[in-house]
Picture (tube, rainbow, N blue to C red):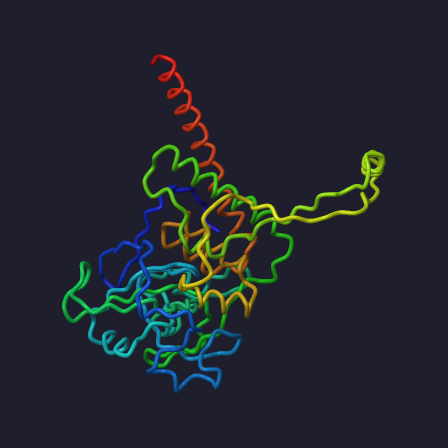
Length: 355
């Protein structure tokens, strides 16, 4: 993994096409055409998929593939501005809920990938067709014909949500044969994940209190954040039993009867389950239990700004590595925010004393 630093700000831009300028990648209200049903492949290639209809799973499927200079990570949301005739034809029958593949164009790939000598976590990455062999599956959230604020008449704006990574095993024109790519088995990372989540929540709180703009965690992160912690609290029938348990604890024995109750990690507004447009996420999490991997990507996306950093994340198959990488970048920024907040509170207190 490359060296990282925390950028703090919440302003994110996404390239929207080959040779195009940036467009705001904020949350937008779901279109009336949006559906929470399971994603399906684009109509033009549905006949080429298996009998499963192209839904997310462990089998190989063929998808029409869009190549840009961007590196798109799972949980990313953004907009493509489609203006080239060949891509306008490719997206002609695109509908909300359709799934297509994306790959970083070979022109934007580093030399190590072009030469076929790039390897990370045992995964070799090279060039296949027009792009690199690790791509992403994107679900269509909305399709808006131009003219709009960012597109001209005759162009299309395609708003997407990135669902997962794929390995591109073969290409034929704009079609790619894709296999799902997931991180290795995740074990023993819950405390690391909780530590990162608490750090991000404190960063948000301090930024808000300091009046910084865009001091809000992305909705994509809230969808995959850790569930509330479960705290086990011993209960005792009498004071004598409680005192006996204290001695047992000091000697390393079991405390005895216990009850459990749920304690939220942090008080924060989470998106509701109904009508939030997260059906694709719901299906993915139920079928592959990859919530922690998606959380690692969503959190790391707050840190990674260069294409090289995002490529390192895209090709990493270690959830722990991504969590540690992001936490190492967030902690110094959090310490700086704490110092700034303390100074702000002290100055504010002095001001009130003078009044």
